[in-house]
Amino acid sequence: MFNTLTVIGKKFRLEGEIYSYQAISMGNINATYKVTYMRADDTLKSYLFQRVNTHVFKSPVKIMENIDRVTTFIREKYPDQVGLHFHHTDEGLNYFVQDSDSFWRVINYVDSVTFNASDDLAVIEATGKAFGNFQMQLADFDGALLHETIPDFHNTKKRLDTLFMHVEEDAYGRVREVAAEVKYIEESRALASELSILFADGKLPKRVTHNDTKCNNVLFDRKTKEPLVVIDLDTIMPGMSMYDFADAVRFIANTAAEDEADISRVFFDTAKFRAFAKGFIGATKGALENIEIATLVKATFAITIELAARFLDDYITGDKYFKCVYPKHNLVRTRCQLALAKDIQRKWDELEWIVRDVIEKQLSE
Image (cartoon, rainbow, N blue to C red; front, side, top):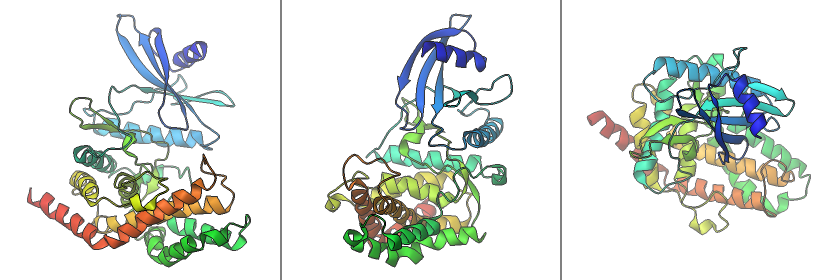
């Protein structure tokens, strides 16, 4: 690996010689290495080398073009903020294709800490602030410049249409055992699809969206726990801002793991919802339209149903997409998300009140 990393470093014109390197666990898709160089002045500088999994990401060049446009825009607009810096080769590319299975990129290393999950409301608020800031940074970026690298990724209506098509086919004979799950999703279909239909009809703002707003995609200052920068831009595409909010809070506010088998432990934590909403809404004041803020709860319900439908669709079509570690893993995931969706429905009025209360308090500050 040392020889490979040396070749990559030279291709990206990095100064000095490799002093040390180590494989690090950053996500489950790409292979990532922290590589530290000793420079001519005897100082050390670290980088992240990533080999992109082109079996998962089928359009890596388009992904890197999106990343280049967005990160360049943010760095030029906010030169004093911590930003992601992807290095370029002599050819002016922010990637290097070594061979058919080696698609590499190099990013400046940011000394920081991440959280896979947190019960600390201050950290949750800071996470909301980070993703809100991300929306603010790109509020005047032309989303038409970006490739849609995963078509219909968060098109809830299409996801549900696909599910019910596969329910009709029942290729693996599994539909009978999921009748209750199918029934609830069918009952929720119109409500869950509403935003994606409006978006497709051009009635909702088209934003630059992250589309993978997990807590661990925010780098925090080690001492202050303030957010530094949002990372993992592989899924950055045109989309709905409230879906970025919703996907983050769907995960953060779940009192249980995403594959909790005991659904009696699955609740939607309103305190965590408030903390995230406070950070997100506070950061996006003046950037988002009223209709985006007004549909945050609806988006949270919709994306929870969408994910449940994706898990269920994978289950009834033979468990081919999501990695399963035991039989019926996808069914357990489905039931967990549906339990969460039902609790969101029960708490809908309270969640809407929380959003209004957060806005009123933000305006009074």
